[in-house]
Length: 563
Image (cartoon, rainbow, N blue to C red; front, side, top):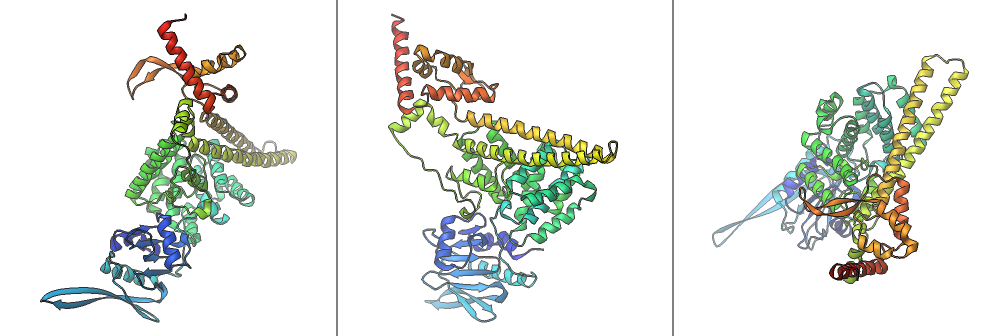
């Protein structure tokens, strides 16, 4: 059944016209302007729709719709606030006048409430008067059908919701892992624990989840869990939760099969109908999952990440799904919702997801330096490395998440080991319980190995963000010209391999360049980074001077030979 929140989101833009912003995609500037100027008792996360009628787009006049009331602020007049429970009906009064035989019609909105009748001014010059009447009458028709008119958060990440809510959410995912083969395998368990740490599930509730996973015969029906989630969604728009839940299910599915084959899975196909998720929405969610993974797989720099997120935001807008819904539980690569939001803030895209700054507290990184300073950064290679800050931040977050996941897995391993020892001591060496505990212990050990491998890979990738992908031999030779630096130079050269210079997607030059080897271990990468730092490869003055001096020496040598 449609409620006022979903009604506003579906019809407000059509009925009010341009200047309408639907949560969670309400610009901070307009939201702050509206609340400060005419809705001081409204909380930002409760705003469902904002209509801005100002000429300079400040949000200081217009309309603001929440879950239980709306505010109206025309130009040069006092604002009014009306609670939906008091709203009876809204009429459209057509005032017709004639001047010089010319007919003029002026529209007035008469709003009837239990206590007062309001005549809404026409001084919001840009709004659709007839549309406002239809929208308010639609709210009036729905208000009596809802048990309670309350405000729900449009922006709260899953990590900030109650523990019972998070546990029910995770139980749906647990049911899915058991659906195809009646067991949860090591990689599925590892990824589920990664989500547990992303959303900060407390130890007591982790214990309950562990018990749920240990007793598949006692699993609750998935539909019952969905209904429980819906009933618990008193402080958040459930339509956002639905998309997030399906995203996490799709990611678990992707561990074993291509995303494009999701419709062959009976669990997903049935849940798609229960959650009323369209194929277009699923395609968007799949794009988000792939986009997240591509950032790390293809080592995208900050400029490429920003473009990917903007492209994804455009797709989301076209489908009508806020990115908040996709990233409610964070990113599948291991970032929490707050972590991803703060990462986007570092790219100047802090408002893209719609999570309020009250949850993240992260500002935008300030880019400093122009002219010669920028030129030196380009010469020394620092500009390219600085363009990897977002990927480095993501990898740091993944490393933290993976370490926490490993800690959870070690807790589980210790718990199951203790149970196994106790069972053996009771003389049940051949019992089914011993077999179950042994199998679970093996699965947990394999899960821990998955997480450990992920940890090492992420640490390697983090160091790579701080290394030149292509080596400047001119700079290296100049910086290591002294005999005492010979071993450092040899080591650095050994970490790079010659490859043809790529001109475009399919064309290669006959010339070669030295590219970082993919086979280096974590220790080798760490030693390479220390070596480059030791010779001053990235120093603004020394590195830049070496590039220029070395280049000049090579030019002289090419012209005059070794004389």
